[in-house]
Length: 330
Ligand code: ADE
Ligand code: ZN
Image (tube, rainbow, N blue to C red; front, side):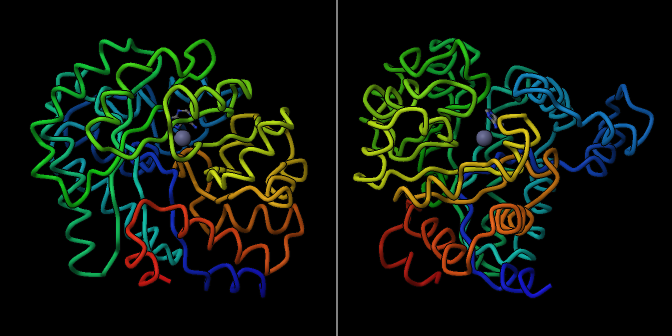
């Protein structure tokens, strides 16, 4: 209980969070009803029971199917606001949030609707509660680079309108077989445009994908990156350059990246001097928000309070906020 209140009290920044992954079964059902979308599940309980994954792809199939209930600006607002309420309860002060426009534009939802709903909730939270946030538009790597370019073109006219929020570009979805090089040109373009860059790498994919995310895509942070440990040279580089890793413990457990939390390498990565952070990834699907992720590693890996503070501080240091704004959040 003491450990729990210590974790609750820590101010946190979340850097690896897919907004579509915050859609709780209850809200998913409510939106399905509101939008007359039929679901292949009879109840919230039945849907939740389906959240038994064997790997990344088995999760992605359900996650993309679930996103079909999101139709209107209000739906995106409601989902985002629910995340904010939940995160504030976990003492999250700042969040850099991924969204996948292709998941929605593929279904005929206008990209303007996606931006508008998410942004309205985040701006409201900033004004009312001082909840700080930014958004990172992510490309789905199972789709083509051409499709990513088309998404970028569709989004760029919105850049001025969302200048206060839209800071970066990410890369997610099925990692194996979709290496960073596949997106070299579109990431080069995003770099020219002045966006911050991140990519999922080394979750299911090999350490080579982490290296290529750094050397080919020129990302500033690695999302997941846990398989970096298989390459000692890469480990040394990540430590020396203090390249942040946005690690997601409960996600790794649910997607069978590790089979037991006691075997998670988060503590080893931290002890090797890497800029490790703790994040929730897709909390509605993986069974916990920020405090639950902190608690899982604290208990299973017997982390000290100093280590927990270090993990939380690493996240503030790794944000894309200007230095002055970072200090203010602590
Ligand atoms: N999209 C949402 N969560 C993801 C994850 N953990 N890995 C890759 N793509 C994702
Ligand atoms: Zn992720």
